Image (cartoon, rainbow, N blue to C red; front, side, top):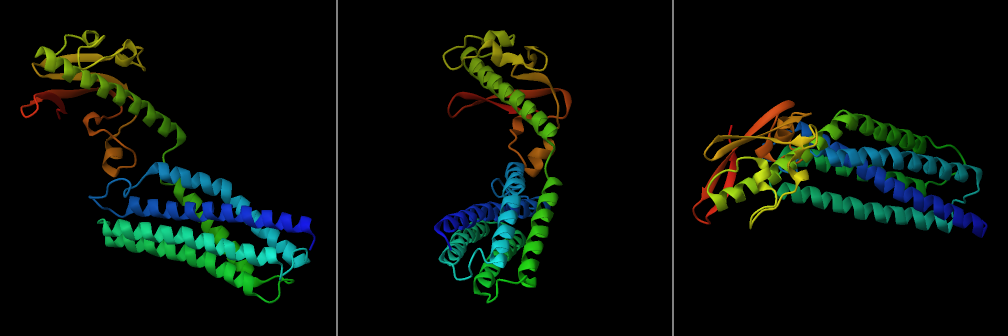
Length: 312
């Protein structure tokens, strides 16, 4: 085989390795997140709980890396059949075993992480399902490449190789399709990010109100009283502006130490807080639409610092 052919097939094998790692990890992450979502565990906290961000990354990885891997696997096998890539080629042997090595390292790390989650208190059922997923993916990769490197005749179509190829393709497609059933649409995610931006502003205002209360022993009459700040807080006009209404957030004093901050939200974040699919500040739980969220200032005697708590 010519040196130019060596370089070409080395490129095929190395790129297929990268695509294989992304595809295998992505398929596993999708299954892991589906397990996190469907197997109830009231003590599960991120990163042990369901995370849509991880699921979205895995779906993206399969969409990009999957076709690359399966195309290169088909191309390598085609060159074996035509004799352009020799069975005893050093490139084929060395890089096949190198793929096995890298795959082993990745999968060992994956199993270590799974066992670590179990030792940290993850449910036995979740541990068993995740371990089974890791073992099955590892076994599929190892058995395929071991069979491929040891088979005697590479010049004829092989039903075992064909079975591995189409079987793994179906599994990858199944994981990809299943993942879409457990994520929100891009429009919904954008709405969630909009609401999170509002909640972050409300949290910033809330901190300033508490600092104001600590210094003045009373609530501010309006949010503009917070502009410029005192010794422990500082807000700008943009910090107290509701992006949806393009005006100052509505602020109501309802008691000596209680107040409401109001805005219009696009989503209901209470379910997100329950299933921990995204981070939610529980002080700002809200439904969709116009909402007034009540907070109360509480002075902690031990440190003489105010701290607000939500009023339900």
